[in-house]
Length: 435
Image (cartoon, rainbow, N blue to C red; front, side, top):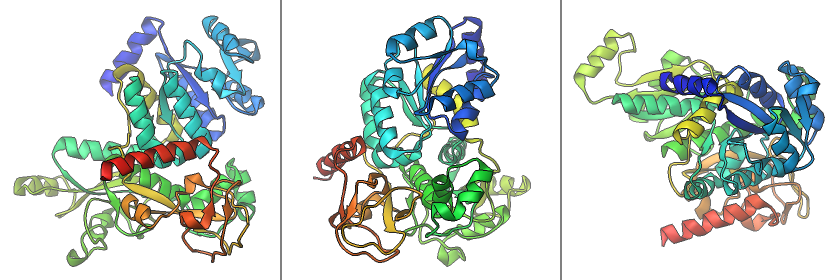
């Protein structure tokens, strides 16, 4: 971080800030705009939202007067505004992705289809892209990462999001010489698979969230998506479908995440999971085969071993995204990137209620479906549908019971979407790699 700070200070001194385009001006987006204005060597040049008032409010909340903001209706408007050192808002992200001076695009929309389009457009226009949109990443991230490498730009998840924070622990542990046994995140909310947006509307209003967003936290889909991102970056797998989700304190985690024959819950090591009682933190379970290292860990009050926990008691979501922006623009590095050409884990789809043949579905956090994590190979073998491919144009073809897992032959998917096309290309890559 010291080197990164110095590089940013140099950019500030040279008046060559990293120019950022943010797509999505909800809670996370608004926070990021305010934070970027306090980062040396970086600025939120363009903010995009389908509601222009949200983009304007993001700047105004950060103390930017209306006279310093340009409303753009074309890419030329954006270019001219940026050249004049004005802040720019627009309701069309496709215009912004083509802007000459934009260095890094941040997707904070949380919508799988929108994320696919933003990532692809950024890569096509040779912009680095930072995905706060994990929902899109777990569907087609490996393919998008491969496209980005070919284009010479960075495709990455964000520091501060729980997967990025967990991977920081992973990278630290491995670079220090430890063996990582498990990665996980605390779950803030109670788990209710069948919760719907109308049931949490008041809580969502108080929290400043959309009801479907809060419902996606409570029904577990968000947790499954974040675990899948950790898996795809680390190569770790879910130990069981849906994860264990034990309850415990931080000090209890090393014992909980031991093998069954050692008194723990695990069938094997190299896994991702979630736990109650340790939110909002992330954790890594580590060990070593060196007796002297065990001795020093005990001296350092890290526990009796043989397993130990590295615990980070916070993650600052979009407020840490500037770290990922800087790493991409300065060093050409990602914070959390899919490890290979194929996913390691999949977020598969379950019915949130009894569904009748011909009924339309919806999407993440809504009324008809929720997500669960599974190994990619097993999900592919069983033809289980990734939840990121489900939208309100998808229809169920057969009667399905509440809680059932949806397979491709049960669902008529919307094949007109960009995320469906990218997923198909990724699956064709899988076919080639497994021949």
